[in-house]
Image 1 (spheres, rainbow, N blue to C red):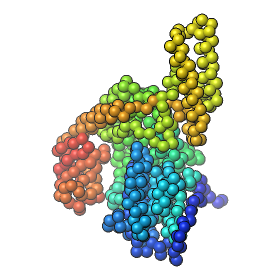
Image 2 (image 1 turned 180 degrees about the horizontal axis):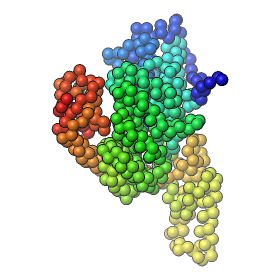
Image 3 (image 1 turned 180 degrees about the vertical axis):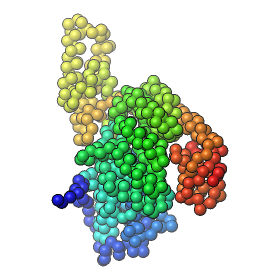
Image 4 (image 1 turned 30 degrees about the vertical axis):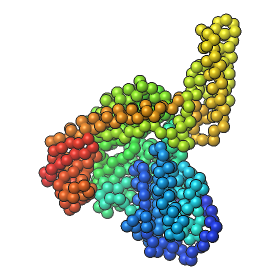
Length: 560
């Protein structure tokens, strides 16, 4: 028999290269072009970007470059970008500006814009900032050398943003340069298949692609052999791991296997980010079964505590479902650390809806929360919402029953005709002249909204996803953000205080840069602990009695 392993990913790099005028080709190969040169990496955004930057940096080191002492003097500058927040694009261009000026002044500098803004902007970025040499999406983080070749040898502008390129081929890239010698990121899945109406991630990181268990376990085993004491499994929706595979696999099964490997290497394991729609009882049960290596920590974004808002967001669960998951975690792991994400001020979030979010927070009492005021992101339906949904409601048209724009037009005209016939037959449906004028206006607004939907670029979202409630005023967003942060901080402080007097095993990660006589590490529950100690403790587990509890950190005294 022959056993054949088939990796279902596209390996063709699919690069778009544009020759520059007056660009002179260099002699030699890419290693020659990189000899004696320096690099700098600027990382923005989430843990996924941090992991990507480690791979990007490994690629640069593999080409013989060395890290520059000053980023402003580097020969290769990589901006690894994030597009989650408002003004993300402006932030990128502000970073590009000084490097572009260096290039215009004749300095030898190669400018690479990587990550989610690069994927989102693509060729537009190259046109707006022609000094940029490379734009590359996050799926190319493992193949930086291949992407750089045209730019550094032939002076080409290179666009690497093909959504079909497979991101899983970690073995093809250079060894990542880890940001820590104690704790490491291990990506288990790339991309996201969700269609949250506010979120740009599916447009920038592509579809879900799960790495094979064999590759993941081999990476963790290698980390353990090299002395790493902790790893964090990364995925946009980590609990959805394996659903793109044939046969389908379960994240809980992967956790079981990871626990077995990590135990042999005396490692701790964490994972992020859990999705309330996909996390299962079996995941919680596996963590409870292997608490010696699987840390009792769950980061599970709620985003809102109101079902109507969650539906507008396209989250696929209710507040009740979220709380059921929390109850399961608390039952199996009473001391578990639970953190969440919330967005306030989304279109359609009423005062009552916001109060429900605060009520959910009170029910859970999170150890930590990431909060943000809603900001429109390019290419997302919610960014285009302008209140047109109210026109459909006035006509009694339920858009969720329509699958096409034409179908919605038919429903609007039918509803208007029914109201007109009722009025003409003197049934009037309770409509006075002013009310009837409102119906006529609603019809016009609804049809105009459908015309806009028809003219919108094709996307992976529902054809009518661009129709929604009005945007929330900035002053309302700011006030809600202030209130939710106040509530989140109060809960976090209360949760920290439960540690007072306890003796906690703390994995020491580094020196405290603000107090050189101290080191900092993490409890099993992911709380930072500062205590007196030397660098000889880095990478060891030290028992500490907690003597001070702050909102986001603890202070301890060594007992061992």
